[in-house]
Amino acid sequence: MKKVQIGNVVIGGGENIAVQSMTNVKTKDVEKCVDQIKSLEDVGCDIIRVAIPDMESAKAISKIKSKISIPLVADIHFDYRLALECIENGVDKIRLNPGNIGSEDRIKEVAKKADLYNIPIRIGVNGGSLEKDILQKHGGPTSEAMIESAKRHIDILNKFDFDNIVVSLKASDVINTIKVYTLVKEKLDYPLHLGVTEAGTYLSGTVKSSIAIGTLLKNKIGDTIRVSLTDDPVNEVIVAREILKSLNLLKNAPVMVSCPTCARCNINLIELAKKVESYLAGVKKNIKVAVMGCAVNGPGEAREADIGVAGGNGYGLIFKKGEIFKKVKENELFDELKKEIEKM
Image (tube, rainbow, N blue to C red; front, side, top):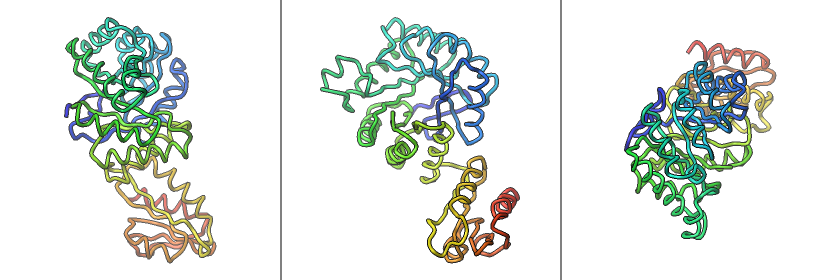
């Protein structure tokens, strides 16, 4: 498979799976946009995309890029001139929706400019915006229709000697997402950007994305992922990284386990677990952390954890590899655990 360089990140060809997200503030508001991107960087976002609805947003690209450290992608719809402006302002990748960008001449202009600046283009096919003739031929936005749309626009770019391409084919449901990416894997040699579009709110979107993206990655399909949520983009990155962790595809990242609690639990474990999880989102260590409600689950059942806590009656135990290390008051558990993790 081809490799594609996006700023300082390489995808495809066996490289690490890159986590992407998209800002939800106005791109032309540079300060807010940069603040949000930095919060995404803090939780492990590898590539960030911004919407470009107007020329003012396109011109803001250079200012944003100068203040962040991860690759910046411009999301373009309808007006090819916005893509040209973004490239001139130093964007690292362009995402085009082939169904609404216009004539071949317009695509040619974007391809020429992208090639000049060595900027990749993601052909972002969406089941909701396929060409009319393709929809009519296939009777709707089927997997085959989406693949035909992608191939059509790959052929157009190839005609203009442009081959620096990433492909995505996004449906809004799990079954079709798995089907279309499984089929296209056998037909194309370009890096694949995985995601379920319009996946929904935090709960439903997390479930859909985890099943679809997880299934594909388990089958060695996909090179970069975006979990799409109607929520804070920070949660998109956290969920995406959890998917990678669960498949042992993420290096230098902590894994947390916690018990569901029962009548033996005498501390507020739910609150503690949430605090630990939030803290670990910014930790870059290859460790396993256990947050357990009582001595039955931890340190006993959680003895494989590098470090963990187990609740008592108004107090808690901190243990390492199943061995009790320290006994502290309940209200000190989080801070003491954090201190020990920072020493590791």
